[in-house]
Image 1 (tube, rainbow over the protein chains, first blue to last red):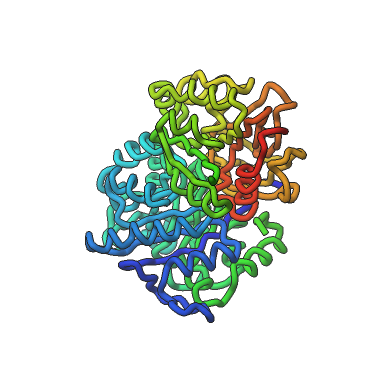
Image 2 (image 1 turned 120 degrees about the horizontal axis):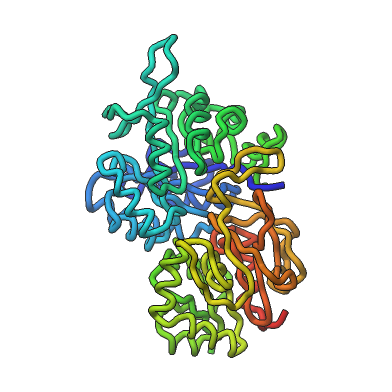
Length: 257
Length: 214
């Protein structure tokens, strides 16, 4: 009896269309984020994360409209990340119906932005997204650094220290992605997840590498994550959200069924 | 003529969600408004809130909404507080260096703390964020909501009611706290019904049909 571990499907959206492919059987328009978000809402997802990978300003307007349409159909929390650089960006997304925003590169460029955003909008809606990559050589103590620009640009910043700092600056939650595991289907980076979770007093969402349901369980039991995020295992219909929750519950994890 | 529901807008937070959830459960006219006259004319009032209580109470007092709210409560119309909107109805809060609140309910708002522990001694993260079980009484706002249903919470401070008769539901996260308080025509919840899927929409459904009597 207590707080449930959350399962969060993630949509990567470019210019109002879901990319990375989604293969639900009976959706007419497979790329429509609103249809997909509604489907996850009905399937029992605990939250939805919407990652906007749009680069153009015109595309951003499309994103705002898409968020508005999702928010009027989906009655679970919605996080929007990607391209959040100012309090104006945050205000726009919250007004469109987002409950939280994910801040990534902008936090690295200007850590005080996280402070200002948290002061203005409250920690509950500020998610700091961290893309971390292992930099220690085999045999050395494990060490991870954060990367920006989709994992292409090293920053020299230690991931654990960064997470602790972001929490002090008023982040309400950490969305932690392992660049080494993202897209591999080999499971979360559990030492990384567990190290970050122990370093911050705020909830940690594990992301990157989920290939089967046991990986979700491992993220919670060994990685000590408070929530697990996955995209492709749900998009391609390999597993439903309900199957994932049932599997986790059978292994002693508290979920919302 | 259809009923109206006023969602009080004092510049804090995302009111779109509350309005769209109300649109899902009723045909009432939903007004997101900061106009006291419009609030006074409405048949029902929703008092939401997110963020830090110091900022919220600052705006509430600056705009005179503490008085507006008292008048609405005195008029007998149904009033629903949500999240920081609930905390603002208590006597005071430990947040923001100590904040005097509206004092419609006796009790304080306290911090979960930096060293919150679960029943097995495990460290609990703060904010309390996610879906937790709510143990409710038989108030009409819980109609058709299964006992111990899960609702979506996100908060670092919790309500300790000084009057157990006013506690309409409880929740447990390291400590037991009031998930809902109520008296007469006022009801307030710590969780976000507008983000709590089926159970949350049911509570809003019950609110917009409630006659204001417990």
